[in-house]
Image (cartoon, rainbow, N blue to C red; front, side):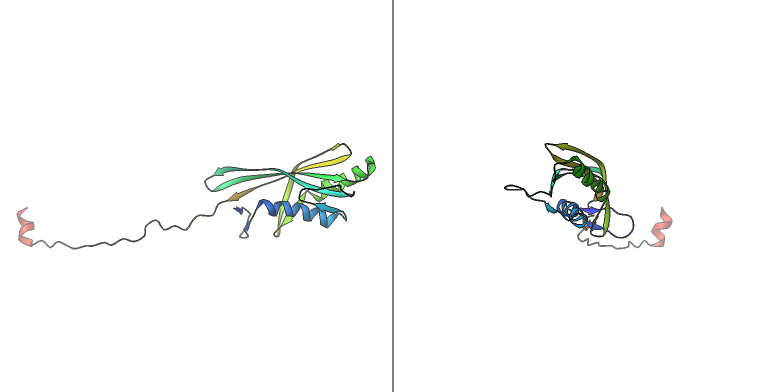
Length: 159
């Protein structure tokens, strides 16, 4: 699928590119380890874990589709509310716009909750994609034969 952007610049968007964009935004802004795969074993706080909830893909018009990507960013850190709320404020700002292949994607539906001393930050990245037209020729080849029928002037006058 191709991301539908204004102008001539189009890029191929995949689920992994969106996920890596979220991880990169966190890594660039925070000096904290970021995990994007399943965590095996104990975590060394402070760290982030990026969990992609679900991706939804709905047809909009013809070859145009809507793609919804939902994330839950876990923050394991100091158990004080002050630390959680400081990180939270930075997350709202950092995750508002992420860059992927030179294009900016806006985070929407941002919200948070703290469960069992773990900060959960939820954000969605929704955008249009379209499926490029297939270059299939409508007709392989056509052979046409033609000829003209000559009528004599006398036959035309008899009619």
